[in-house]
Length: 225
Image 1 (cartoon, rainbow, N blue to C red):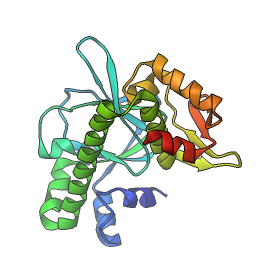
Image 2: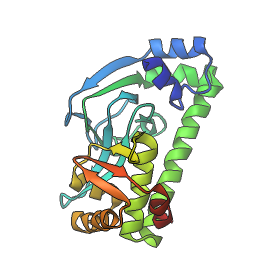
Image 3: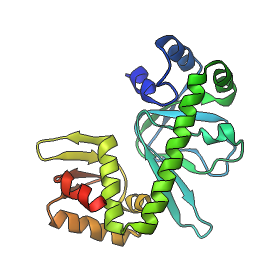
Image 4: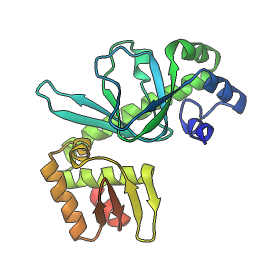
């Protein structure tokens, strides 16, 4: 199971079984309890992480104390790779949203693979390109999309990564509080809750504790455009 999840990460995706096994042998397993912080914004960073079980949130804090949730990551997703190319301090705080298992790789162990295995370098470049594309999409949405549109888009993204089909629709356990979901959308909790209530009244979804059931994906997708 762990091997399957690791192989889905961009770092491993283009490696053959022998090379993937050798790279995994250099990694260290890390366990976090719900709410535990892996590293904080400003810390020195020298490791890349892959989530194999659970969820991790990446966030930043403004000087006035306001928080912004940059991403919610689940199994197969990687983070921490920026410090490999830019040895500066961590750009975000990583916190476990649920009990979480990670596999980490130090820069010292990863560097030889970059020169000896071009497919590993390609995987990291694809990861950086994906991160840049996501950042561009977020900036575009903040300028051109209203809050209900951004809420719909985030729910669809969460559904794609964490959704489980049910008889009613797609059940999405995101494990986020209302405040965290609002931070992920980039709006106030009151505005996001109003958008969610509107979607519920239209029959597009049902709210549950730290989860939603998407009842009408097509309507939600049209609202996200």
